[in-house]
Length: 200
Image (tube, rainbow, N blue to C red; front, side, top):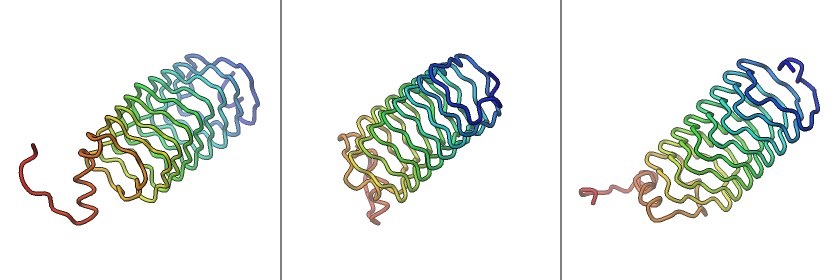
């Protein structure tokens, strides 16, 4: 099934394993229990789509632009999301492990019950997003932006948080000891505090 035939479609149990959707524009696709493993959808555009109980393990979504897309009970393990944009997207019960998502943009997104582990999210942008019960474990969030974030039940464990922006928006989040130390320079900068002396 060609990508242009997916617009407006409602599918259950369809397999697109290894399919090539590079540069494709997909609009209003409703896919339930879909097999999208190793999908190649770089530089494409998805709008108003919903993926429920889907497997996107190993998918290449680098540079993908999405708007108003929902991912529900979906797996993205080993996926590449570098430079992808998820404007106003809804992720619920999503798992993202051993992935690369540097410069991912989640402007005004809503993530609920999302687990991210061992994933590179350097320079990711969560401006204006709403994160509820989201756990980052062993992730690199260096340079990530959190301005205007609404956080509830967000946890960072063993993450790199050097140079993050908008640290005040993480109020109420839980940090491991090393995570807190990593975020300290950004917090000090936000409060106008100067830290002197050599790092121990």
